[in-house]
Image (cartoon, rainbow, N blue to C red; front, side, top):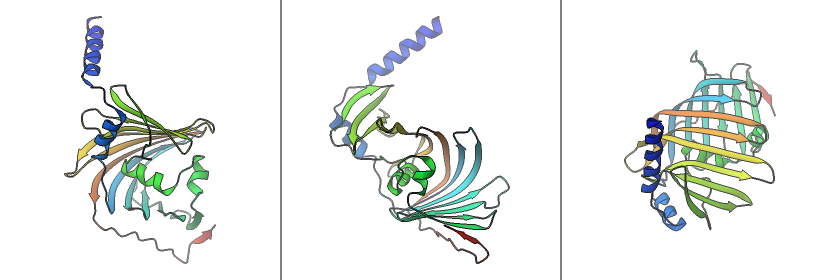
Length: 241
């Protein structure tokens, strides 16, 4: 009982230290953590679970040219590239190294696969851990020892939980109540990269209503170093559209 009482007392004291702030005050602090980059590259360990509980873990090399392209090379345990993916605003291209197939898909492919309205900007912000949308008239509060903002953007409820010590993003949520679809992204393991802080881990949960769970842990992170986005298609590959 003593330990439980102590834990409860500590939690109350921690919550009491968080001073109430207006939505405007919180947003000003959040904006200071925003960052603009031209290039991003990292190694990643990815865990992925589908609705049928099938799961897999693999390594990936991720390269991103801001507002232009996302390049992903998937490498399983043996270290041989299994697939290469290039995502732009206009299309999704996939090289299946195992079966020697090339898929030329439209920009809505990921949305159809996940059952959730995912576009290039949403993907880019997810990889970078940046806000999905800018709030217009949010409500503010304190919950779970975090500052909390909520607004309705494009008929979708947008929620944001913010760490009170440095106003870095803890969690982002988009909830379309009418369509019964929800996207949760939790960010963690923040590192200081001189001009800004960056979350090296993120957990993504998609409810559409099928559930997808993705965990990504970055290492060897690079910013603003131009990268090769090589995507050569061999004549030996079968083209699939």
